[in-house]
Image (cartoon, rainbow, N blue to C red; front, top):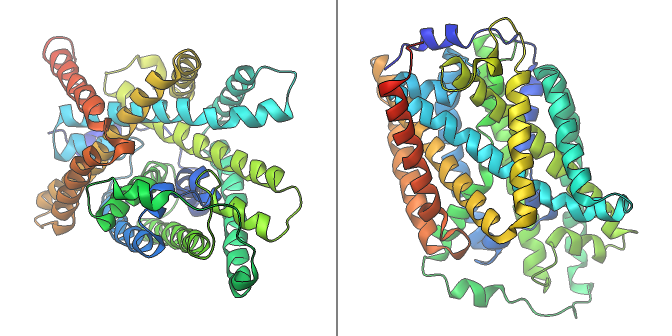
Length: 446
C-alpha cells in the first residue's frame, strides 16, 4: 500500500481556491438532478408514497455513514483524486487505480447519456440547428468553463445549484399550499399503472425503495473531491461537509415527501412527472416552458459537477503514471488537460448513442451504476484501513461495505437495473486485469 502523504505530494499543484459554499455547490449540483426536480422518482413511487419515503430515509442514513467516512479522510488528507487516493493508500495500489478508472468511466457514461435529455429542448428552442450540434457545443462550453480552473467551475456550478434549490423549495412550498385544496381538485386524468408494475418485482417493496433511493443519492461523494481545492481549516472543512450533507438530504427528503403527497392525492399518469402535474393543478401559465427551464438547469448543473469530479480522477491517474502525463502537467496549476479528455469521451459516447441508442444506453448505464457502487464500497473499505492505521476501528465502514454489497446484488432483481451487474462487473474485472498486467510489466513506481 502506498503512503497517503506520498500520494498527496504526487498530486500536489492544484491551488486551494474554493470556499465552503462552492464546495457544497458541487454536491448539490451532482445530486439534485432532473428526476428530483421533476418529482419523477418513478421507481420509488411504485411502492407507494409511505414506503418510498421510508426507503429514502433509510438511504439517507447510509449516505450519512458514507459522508462521515469521507469527511473523516478528506479533512485529514485532502487530495484531488479523493476516494481513489484513499483506496490506493488503505486498500492497495491496484485498487486505487481501479477506483479512479471506474469513477472516471462512470462520469463519461453519465455525461454522455444524460445530455440526451436536453435534445428535445434544443430542438424546440433552437430549431434551425441540429440537436446533436447544440449538445456537442454545450459540452465544449462546459469543458471550457472547467478548463479555466476549479474556481470558475465552482462559481458556475454554485449559481446553477442555487437556482435549482430555489426552484425545488418553491415546488415543495407549492405542494404544501395545495394540500388543503386537494379535496377540491378535479382528478379525471386517468388511473395510474404503477401498482401493477410494482407487483411484478420480487423484492419486498421497502428494500426496493431503499436500493433505488441509494442510487439517487450517488453524486454526493463529489464533495470530497472539491475538499482538496477548498481553502479552509480542517475543523471548518469538516463542519462545512456535514452541513452540506444534511442540506442535500433534507432537500431531497422534502422533495420526495411532496412528490409522494401528489401521488397519494391525485391519479398522476405514468408519463407525467408529479411536479409538472402540480404546476398544472395550480394554473401556472406556460407549464411546459417553466418545466423545460428547470430541466435545463438541473441537467447542466449535474454535467458540470460530474465533469469537475471526473477530471480530478483522471488527473490522479496521470500523476500515478496510468494516463498520459500531459493530462496533469507538473508545471500547470490547473487540470485543463484532464478536463478536455473528460469532455471529449462523453461526446463520443453521445455520438455513439445517436447511432445505437438502445445498446449504448444499456451499456453506459450498467457500467455507471456498477462502477459507482464499487466506488462507494471502496470508500467504506478505505475508512476501515484508515482507522486501523490510526489504531482504531470503523464500524461505519464495515456496515457500509455489507449494505453496498447487498444493494449491488439486489439490482439483479429490479428490472430497471437487471443487467447492470452483468455488464458492469465484467468491465470492472477487465479494469483490474488491465491494471495488473500494466503494473507488472510496464509501470514505473511514482
